Length: 316
Length: 259
Image (cartoon, rainbow over all chains, first blue to last red; front, side):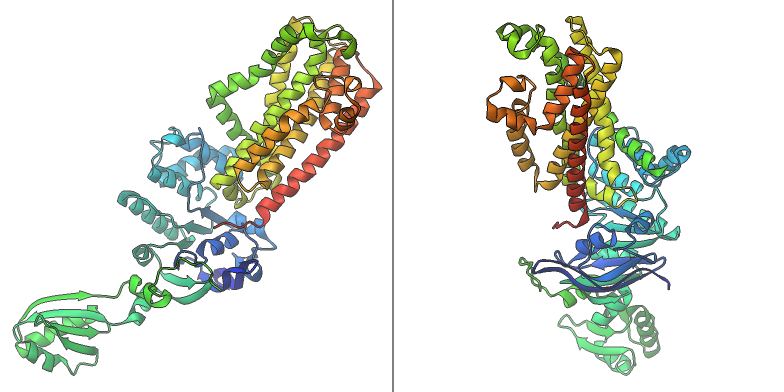
């Protein structure tokens, strides 16, 4: 079994309210797995179950082969959990927090200093390590949090909206961090509402809504399933170009736009562009401008979860 | 051993926070000694020595002041746990491979240590004011032990409350309501014999009474079998409070509803 996280029929209800209905997820070793879904879809509840903070009411889940309900201690040894809001407070310095957390993860006493230093270095906090937490900016606080997630070199990192409310620099730092952890061999479960973030980082995403998986796959697959790429061409002879490319098998649809541009709907714009250029040259059609666009994860998301805002959380 | 490492790491956090809060440190360490001086100087002459059973009101009050301090400290002992619950740090701790008991035990260890310093200081002030501890230096050790048992009871009870309440407002409302009655419904300021009947009945089921009884006998009379029986009752009270505290902690960390 290569799945690092595996849930089957995992669900959580509070009385009549169903927070997570029945979730089947499989996260493979080394995956950066994106957990997407509208607010109230059950992302945080799912994460709280996988991090052993909540007991499921139905179904089961295994992390690194250990049952979250019956073998929580083994699960906790193997996960690093970075919560949505930074939980630290008080008068300690960044370094003191990291050292205390290292001890809580049972890093041998003689290694605590070194390990704390490494973790601080990994998030670029060495210079500010001896300043008090209260003086830290939002971005620094988040980085401290991320550093603490690394102390025991966990097999699985669970990140709950790690870039929420961060500035651009801090966001890029977080992304670098995720990539570094992936390269070190960690498996990452990333809950996020930023679809560009999921697109950048994840090799696999699952969109959940009302506590079930609505759709799952690589970002590229999902986008392809939504619709065609669009190639817009400005040319001196649109009619002729339409005639000569019309027969190609990769063309899904051709529309003459009001602007006089030709719109080609194709399976894969990256292959269509050189083909169009080649045909244009061969047939003597002058191409003046070409632009293309691809569906984004936003399109995927909206297609599968609906467009309306959900104020009511009475999903059932 | 992992458990000791966990407890000492958490206690280190409490320790650093206390040291950085200088005013808090000074006030909390000095408070019982100051109370003793105020009571000694201010109230002594208004007291009928036949009621309290000794000529020396300060000797009588010493145990009461220690108990008073412990109840007050119980609130500050539970407060960080309350904040940790609300800021989410408790969740973070619970996602770590640590023993559930480490969190509360670190609080006990820290609290008992801090309290022992306070008690030694108030005893030193009492000695300067002319109090003699009849049971001698070993008696002082037993006084610290009785105080530690009471500290555990109070810390556990207030921690249980901190974990049980939906939000901190309830905690402070309840604590504000019970702290003073808890003291007045004990022998902290008045001996049981001098109380109205109903009050002495209530005082007899109050664990505070037994801690004070043990400490007071050790100061005023010296060694006695009643010290042992009081400590026995106190041990049972501490065990009950600890059980309740652990239960609330488990409930809190077991399965919780949150947004």
